[in-house]
Image 1 (cartoon, rainbow, N blue to C red):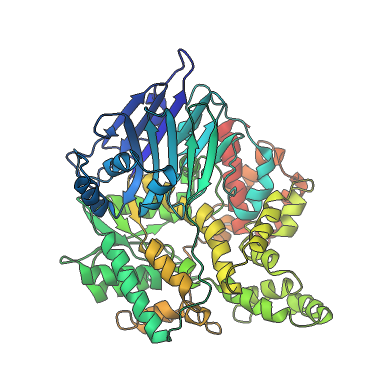
Image 2 (image 1 turned 180 degrees about the vertical axis):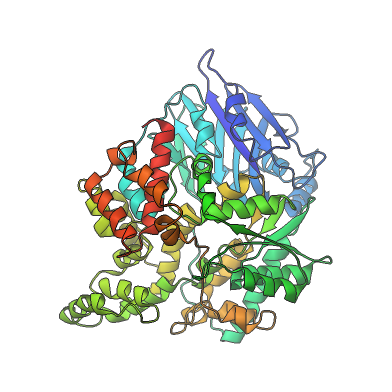
Length: 618
């Protein structure tokens, strides 16, 4: 795991030094760094040494030094690729995965190089013979890659801060993305908060030719079969069990200490269970929680799993004063970020890095096997749409009548409020960080391009059932721009490599081929995964309600952190008020403080925006 950066500029006397670009990436790769310099180009890397500790330091090139490569991530099939290259007569000097890419690039086209790699990666290839640059990003976007094209000068980096470190690139705000941010809690790929800075989409390669022409090509998209596998639930469970075990096994290759995140949920518990079966020594596990009685603390479940598998278990408690870290979080993201679970993720990564260099996580289990309540709700909404429109409008009107004391009353009200909406807009309302009515009040004249793009993605995805289309939409939005950046930035802030077996390519292909009933049956979520792990995990883990990696923001913002919220959002020095309606913002804060509604997520989203704007002087 590393940080990569580079500059392409053939202009006479153009600055090509990468020291400022790499300096801001050293948290990603503190062990070594190197730069490959070509004609009018420099490609560099900061390295976190995980595999090939002796011969793997950058710069890495092919035999004659004409092709230089920088890699962020891990290539899980590099050993088989290396063997094939040696059989073809290539001479490899290292024992690691980066050099494999340099030799593949000697003959293969850029899309073919990317297709042959299995892993989590972002790579840069500079070919001095052709005077071309190739950038590539893994299939799901586990590793980030940004770029800026100024015509004669091209700059790229693992994080936006590496691009902004370039002396030619200006850090200009794109205010058109603020409405999108308030809805999603992020800016959808490929746009960013910085005008001109783009994120390379997952499953794509970018080629910059010698004449400065830039083309972006797709080399992979999720494979949705014409028809699902004709298998029973038990047969599907056996396939999933074997596929997940293989995925875990592929991610245990490391020359440094390795452990696992453990929340006590089904996904992380399944990973720990399979690691225990595959490891000779006790697995090292790490958990984080809150001294809270409202359902946020999952440490008791994590301890139960740790005892069952005899792990070496370590845990940490998050306190409200941890929000003082918000400035550090924004610095690592380079943009505001609405997902407050980044806070405990940051602290969990810090705790874990004190013991190991690599950790496996359960990220992706919900994406593959439909673990979100909103997916079952989406299917139910589809059935509801068979009713006449007047009946749906009547149901919508009953939302405010649902008694608050009913179990899951908030979820039921949220469902009924969209009874008359089309499915993509209803689904978006369930995932929005700032609800539609408040976003519209805060930004009465804001552009809604991101919502239109979101609905268009749904309409363009014609493959598969309703559930499969929801899964695909989730992969290309929430997973890509929320979950994966969160785990990447918060772990690499501490030079911790996190691997996600559920996001294995072969396992993904299997999951997409399963019948809907294997994933969701009535309101039972992740049915096939629970069946696959039934002999290893106790019922208390398999059957308990899903809990997100949440933070008790609602309570904190009314008590310990009330003054912090008011000083940031309601004072005359607030930077966010220059971009939103101040009266609406005051009303939102007041409604939260009065307990008439819980706007914890909305307030966090606005707080990180304020910190970002203040740090940038905007």
